[in-house]
Length: 171
Image (cartoon, rainbow, N blue to C red; front, side, top):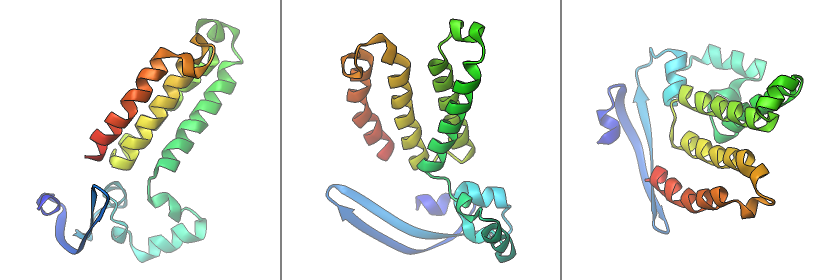
């Protein structure tokens, strides 16, 4: 019923359920308006809305894999932003004295991840990825304050919080 209430869902079929331990999984196929734009189809994950001629172009140019946003894509965007900012930030003594390059790169990398995930619709896998990148960003941000990462109280708190937040996102 939840999927059927979405204004762009025309029909649902191939409904399957399964369990793994205490977790229940639901799989279904949805039919959407065939006139959806490429961007909108990408946002809601309906690749069938992309015309076959367009798929051929994507395949020939090697970008067909970009039609699905995954945690790996978000992490690559964050990593690229991190590396670029890290390299450029270190070129300026003034900037580096105000804020260490690692912190600047961490902040911009996380901002890039959140922006990319939001643009992709912020689905559950994207939320999980952003959360885990936030934990890594916190580790990088606070690492200089502790002799080892295990000694950092901030990281210890995040470590305890991570399972609770992931459980909340999952449900």
